[in-house]
Amino acid sequence: MAGAAGVLLLGFGWEGYKAAAPDDGLVLGGVRVLPRTTDAAMPHLWDLAASAGEPVSSAAGAPPLWLVTLRGAGSSLVLATAGWVCGVLVGLLLAVVMARLARARAVLLPWVVLSQVVPLIAVAPLVARPDSADGQPWVPVVAIASYLAFFPVSIGALRGFTAPDDDRGGLYVDLFRSFGVGWWSGFWRLRLPASVPYLLPALRLAAANAVAGTIVAEVYTGLPGGLGRLIVDFGASAAADPARQWSPLLGAILVGLATTLVLAGAATGLRRYRPGEAR
Amino acid sequence: MSRGASEDLEPDANPGGGPAVAPDVGQAAVPDAGPDTSPLPEAPAAVEVRGATREFPADAGSTSALAGVDLAVGEGELVSLIGPSGCGKSTLLRLIADLDTPTSGTVAVFGKTPAQARADQDYGIVFQEAGLLPWRSVQANVELPMQLHGEPAVTRRTRAQSLLALVGLADFAGHRPHQLSGGMQQRVAIARALARSPRLLLMDEPFGALDELTRERMQTELLNLRAATGAAVVFVTHSIQEAVYLSDRVVVLSPRPGRVVDTVEVALGDPAERAQSGGALRGDRAFFELTSAVREALHASGRATATT
Image 1: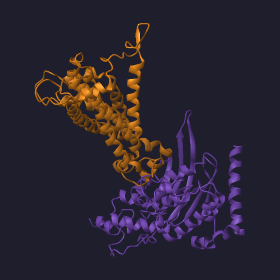
Image 2: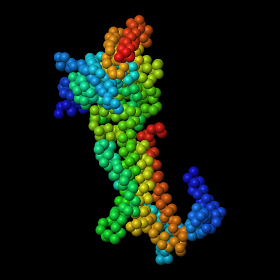
Image 3: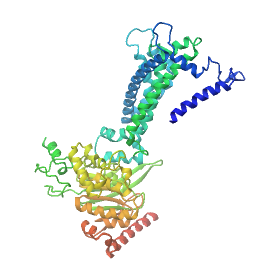
Image 4: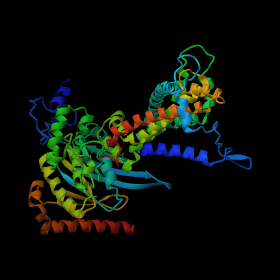
């Protein structure tokens, strides 16, 4: 209900601003602080809806825009999911190594953080060579998505795996030590379950990163089928049909919603591992 | 090879996983390990501490928590460690549990090194906080040590249920820890500590966070548990009454660095008798005299340290 009301409110805000604000937006000292409201910059919502029903090209039998967008969203979702899975696996692996060996943590952690300082635009050309004919064209896209996804997982999981060290003065760690079992038993029975409250937000962040990484990589490589390619194609014909440009954006929102729903489901399934709300 | 098999069939008979004491004599389910029927001519003491010193590195030099402590706890004996806060009584318990190592001196548990005793699961430990895993049910918490040591599910379930019955929580097996009161949580922690049938129970102010009434009830329950299991107990406390009520012997430690300043023998009858008499014992003249003796020793140790 609240979600539907939010969408409705956004629609009213859009049309309200478009009606109230001047066509050229608001320019103060040469800086435009409020956006233009022309039909090219902010099409009417009904124009967006009408555009969604129109075929994407004049060719006979061309599919309508909404179907192309939906397919693009589906294609991007598949790649983002693959990138997310790879990123999560790599992130978890790094976190386990860093949690197990203090020395590995000292060596790896700075590199993990540094990996995200490098701008994606600098990494993309190294991974994705649009001219290279070898291999599957979607591999670089997945690689870039996982490159962005692994980071929050490795940091969040490390935080979670090491949480029992500080919890109640190390009481749980002492307890497991008294049981006389090895580190891995403690990992499966204590550290992993205790990490869930840290892991869930990290997985959500990773999903958002994977979606953004996928679309950026699709734009860069021009991989056909995904939302990134639609952004490139519709951008080229923006002057003729400004409303179309908005469809990949809505598609990206759909992909985000899908991942959020799945992860919310996972969070519900794991709620007994989340103290405070444990019921 | 017969060792693994005997463990599977009769995990209670050989909690240590050490050399099997006796060949399998059938798999009659004995809920608790009986008194030790060791063939050795002279069983080693449950705990033997000699000249244990523990120093912690500090900004300037080091601070000493324990200085040359001697302690002996016989099989089935309950010994309380009492002293002012920060006198190192918890440190001493941690040395016995192999959660910490002495700077000098030796610690032996059933004649072995503490590390070996820990590996053999010769002791169970209870802290001031119950430390139950919040995502597990009460029963699963009691089963945890057995599960970690690969005991079969059926054995675990049966034993956990009998232990929960022993601490009076049979009806709460399916509850989650946060649904239980502090006293009940501590009972679960005790049941968990007994899960591997240890012959030694280490307790670090286990009733310290409980209200007075619950505390007294738990003390009587501990006496009953002792009578039922025959396990030796090292009990850290700062309550004089608690120490006298529970113990065969009260060891009084001085303020930091902890030293043994006095030992008070408590001859108030065996645990079962004490539990029987219940609260009445606390009003006895003998009880009063013993608490006075412990209090006197505590004050004397405080004065001695203050003047040096």
